[in-house]
Image (cartoon, rainbow, N blue to C red; front, side, top):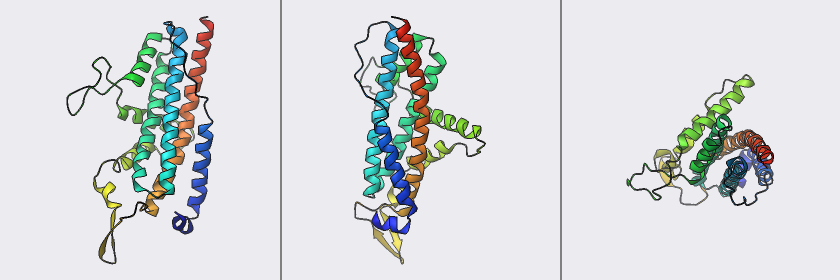
Length: 245
């Protein structure tokens, strides 16, 4: 990484920004264990929703931790973590959108949160499912589309025409998740007409570092937008809980 930073000094500033954003996010929420359900949805919804937001937040923090470690060690496999970050943020964006549109229907919101936290994929390659009573989970592609829609709205509001940024980035980093051509080409290259294998763990190329850093920083900012919307709903549900006492 030292050689990369010497060649591209701008990366140093971006990596410092990434580290700063990560540290801010770690302090963003106070994670507490939810109380036992009372059976009254107007009371329990606040804790149920907060629980979902908490586990998404913990998940994104862990993913960013792995991402920063991967960048610093120039491990090319960290590219697939970017895709995971997009899906995680998309999960929150999707549920926030659904809950906002149904927040007066306590039963519907409860079902949404139950599926999001306890559901499973019943459409499997083996044809088998793990938990026979668990509902079909929401598709991760729907999560990503909702996240993309949210960012498009934000960009349109400021006059930007750079639409479908999330979808384009998701497509790009999905190629690193499976052993297809992009995921494989980082491990070999042609130098002066000769093929060379990248045998070291630290074999991320400069352009890959740039792609990752220039994608993850805007994604964290998108996460901030989604989290503010989530916290607004959280406050509304908390007020509903207080009124029901």
